[in-house]
Image (tube, rainbow, N blue to C red):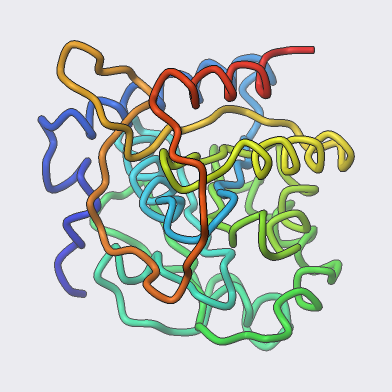
Length: 257
């Protein structure tokens, strides 16, 4: 196993603002868990577009939850472009796709980490038939079996604005944790995906407001800065929201109805 990627800030930069933000996010997620009577919690982390920081968010969130002695399973549900193994310095090998196609068992695929309460289920890249795999009953069976072993299951899923894969996973979950990156998403995209979640009956657990331009005085618990690599193959015209304007759009979209 290689060293953790520097984007796993809760391990590499424990006293940073970003790490404190993830610990605050942990508090909110554990409070949410009390609302479902401490039952196992299954969360799908997604975004509207590539490069908004969903994989980094999923990895750091899983890590801090495991630090609080909650048995946590981090699943790379992005079967086309998995990234979790890179963040944790692991070699790419068989994972979720092998469980879904029936070729391997969970015990053969799961990876243990130096943190006793954190296990990882990766995925091999390049699965063009990922949608068909996620449609199978084996996904439901896998999640049901995982809930019997873990307190919290976190899926890193593909961008919801591009592929249907994340929707297929989210229908079997307790809800979505949505990563919204400042300057990389439009109000139209936000409204479209929120409507899609409502139509599918998928709960929105919370929003991580990422890459915000902030100062120490304006630091908030759901904000962190990630200067990691971006997907250079994706070019998208977006409305450049100042903090206040995007915050207003988010507050209207995600308030309780």
